[in-house]
Length: 151
Image (cartoon, rainbow, N blue to C red; front, side):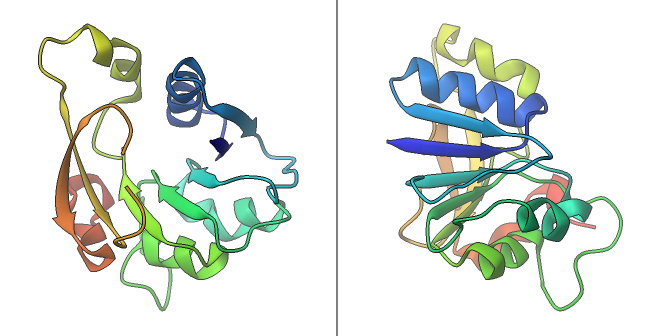
């Protein structure tokens, strides 16, 4: 699977490493953007208040399965109930809100656990997974249910 992570911070880098070690073709983008046309899945791991500007520099976004791992700091984007809904409106594909309630520093330690740690997610039915024991919160309308994504 070809995964494009947008964001080279703690979350984007850590998840990118996990997925690359699992055999996926991972490309990680920073502030300069790039073309995402060939991506099967897009991870958005940039500050929640920078979504529109951060995605504006990435070309080729259009309908990919998308994972929104952002956290909202301050106000939610105008016209959306959650940042995940804003992300979906910009990329257009099935979207999941996930990985924003787990500390990125722990991602490299997941495989050492006897019982996989849980991660909560809300998603469109077509978007799902990542090595954690998934705890499905419901459809994308539940994206604000995670502690970190609520204002």
